[in-house]
Image (cartoon, rainbow, N blue to C red; front, side, top):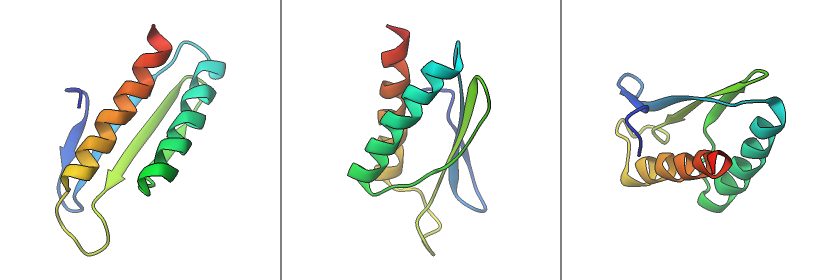
Length: 86
């Protein structure tokens, strides 16, 4: 998981902003992230504009701690983001 992720408490969550060169690249990332979410059954909050997406991954339900699954999911999002860079 990249150093860009911020871990916060109350509520427990991970936050990250990804920047893109254009909307087309952003849209491709969102589609791949949707597929990852469905596979992992983790559905973060995502807000986006023309060239960025803000992602927040919350701890599940009443659990007040982030699990290894949340951190691994963030790491997988980083991999998806880096695909567009290469």
